[in-house]
Image (cartoon, rainbow, N blue to C red; front, side, top):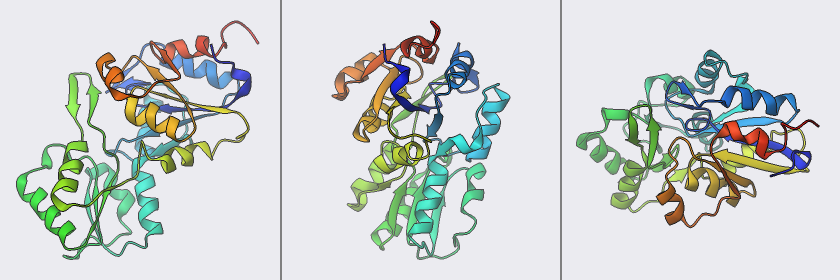
Length: 263
């Protein structure tokens, strides 16, 4: 058990931890309510590149989670902020329609682009698009990836994520992508630095052994792995990452933190 007395806050992954697709993980709402009632600050970090933070907040509230938009740190908004700092002149944006609103300030009309920004575009990938991006990279563009996840869990099963496309573009161009979301240390720091008190321990709760737990530990967080979402025992064993703890689901977290037996 981990003592809640020394906690500065908890960072939660979303998909696979609080919900899977459109289904709430059993016990997740009650667990989060217990944690927040005890005054433990929470932040929510996600590599989801198909929705804005506002879209995610609306989805969570529709599921009956008490989570505000200001508590959510998304790879989409972090990518936008990164491009602002780079004074990006022109970009080739590869994201779904819902996320495009976050990038309207950037020029997307030029043939010669400074940055290729890769998010989730689902089945829109094809050879012509990949070859066009390859040529943009060879002509000097920088490759920006919102994340490099291998796959994610849906209600229908596992689905391939954008990591394979990012890796392929890196290989063919000889360039390394700038990864914005998890497991980038800067992404975890954004959420951690927003906590009101930084003197105690910060826990990361996730279902991805590499991007959540491994990335969080590299950023100085304690990594708690849940056996929901994309959790696979064989991936944990082969990852080389040793979680600080493994629990069955977020429903077990209040007990793990010692929150259910009184103050």
